[in-house]
Length: 293
Image (cartoon, rainbow, N blue to C red; front, side):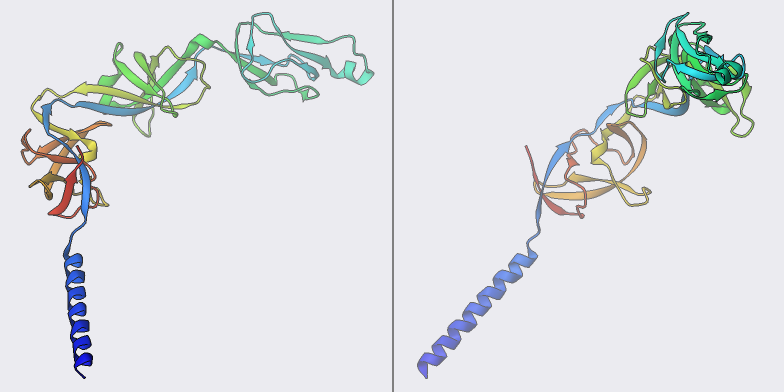
């Protein structure tokens, strides 16, 4: 009997110890590894992004002079041609009906350039006046920027902008002149800009980024990765290191931003404040953290 009582007491002791360890473990908070950044004072460029389209101003359209059959097409889209180069051989309906292959009409390029569109291929029948292809002068490529009337300050000749292609490639562009027409629906004006770019297809949608600096130099700036927000992007906050291992949530109001930095309008942050730059996503107020040096 004494043996049974001793074993029961030992079992109860082990159970109590185990439950105590479990309770302590449940109370232990996970520790998140973070990196830090300090607020700085500076001036953040303000960017205005407008839409633009690639257009070739100098074009030559090649037409069929008579109703005919295309016996030979020597061009493809993207082909570079020289003035006087043979583009097509055509045969009149009469010659084609007689099976006479000796007499053809040769269509040659009137100017050097790049073939954009080929509308007729070998074996096609083309009525008189049919467009066979279009040739553009490579150096005549411009960017037509859509500038809303209230932002017409960007339409001034000599203004510079950054032209960003769909793949992220950027070029420096210069505004040349506005076109004398206004879109009646959007109340925007097309403005011509040029840039030193390689061959681009016509009709490509491009971003035109105009940059201006704020006159106020005393703005508080933080890395963009340090600013957190809710799902609706209406509330923003940062996580500030309160002790060596605790982070607290600080609600903030933000201003302009770039790809890397963002303005903090309020509250006033000190350059000595340690703000979590990375690792703060999902952290609760007073979360435990460890700083990655």
